[in-house]
Amino acid sequence: MSPASDHRALLTDSGRPDTTGRHRIVDAAPGRALDLIAEIAATVCGTPMAIVSIVDADRVRFVAARGLGDIRQVAAVPGLCASALGADGLYLITDATTDPRARNHPLVRGGPGVRFYAGAPIVAADGRRLGVVAALDIGPRQLTETQTTVLTQLAELVLDHLPRVIPRQPATRA
Image 1 (cartoon, rainbow, N blue to C red):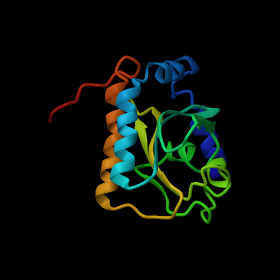
Image 2 (image 1 turned 120 degrees about the vertical axis):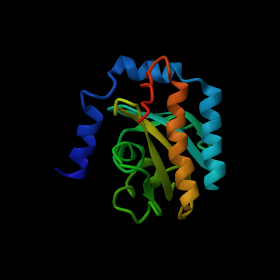
Image 3 (image 1 turned 90 degrees about the vertical axis):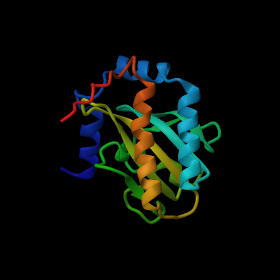
Image 4 (image 1 turned 30 degrees about the vertical axis):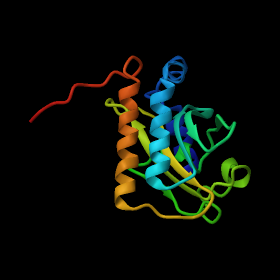
């Protein structure tokens, strides 16, 4: 299977939230807490932009964003958030203009001219992949191990702010 067909299969997988569920997530998202998560992601990673996104089959909706102006959604095309959704761990693009996975993405080709992207998938306890917490920059860069860890932890923290929509499974102790 090609990366493009893998991407489409992930976005249309019946195990992902249905359309109604996705809209409830977006509508129920408590703005201030998610805005703060985006701010922390940008601050810790030293980037001018960061997002908390919910990804569905057709679009990537930014439920919280820093530094993207009026951009609140983009098409769910491969390269950035839609690809990060399927990543095991952090999805990293150090220079999107030269990376074949991302160079044709609208956020790279047009405004704001993204070159760096680091996205950690938001994964519910039942394994459903809902969205991404990401840091973005207009210049190429790398992340430290600490920055990578914090970005991944912020993606886990998003779930704490969606309890009515995505119930958390109780932790089991060994």
